Image (cartoon, rainbow, N blue to C red; front, side):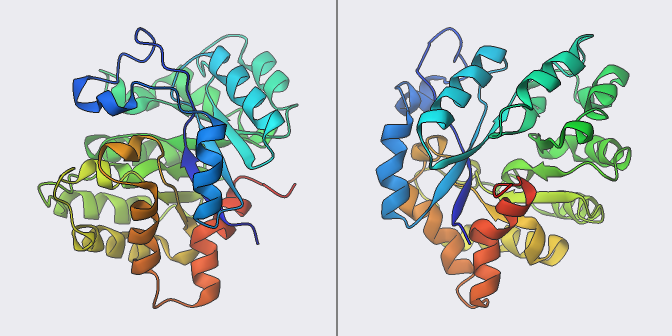
Length: 278
């Protein structure tokens, strides 16, 4: 079974396009490319990764697919398409011919309209993904979870995965409302969750592994072992820790679980969700 980092990014830094990288994130104002990640992955014992879009453009798809074509350790690409476009079918047909093009993500967390995912045209676009065997990565903040429950209820056969535990406020130990909403989300059996992005929601300079335990407890109890997957969120994780620290948070938490359960978290579920071996 391949050991997979189910969530990371590559980019050639562009200050205009990547304006989301503010002064607090200045460590990310650099190029982060496959040759940078490859030795880090190998040293941590991973066989490969899923690279996820960070720019909402078709140029991003082409860039990531080019990376995947020449780097066998990149097992899949989660790209972006305008799901509200009139020519969406044409675009889906084109990109789905690439074996490593696995799914779509829209940066819902950044939309001023917090229930953007409930727009009729967006819903229509999501309805087309299953035909092309494509997954959908859900990137939201906790305030959008109530809308997201309505969103996923429309598509019982569409594979979804929540990114970064829906970004709970770990820094301030805010958990109650998020916990209730995640438990509701987990009732949809086609919804998975990535154990990723946690250090960036904690106190960057002063987090402890125990800070994450209550949130991991919620997800394990709600989703079970077979719908959770590890993701590093490299290089974004660099703002609050090193790659190996992010791995250790999850590996230490699951060390009392069976070897098979650990293998599911660190690759098995990602292999299944993203059809890596197909």
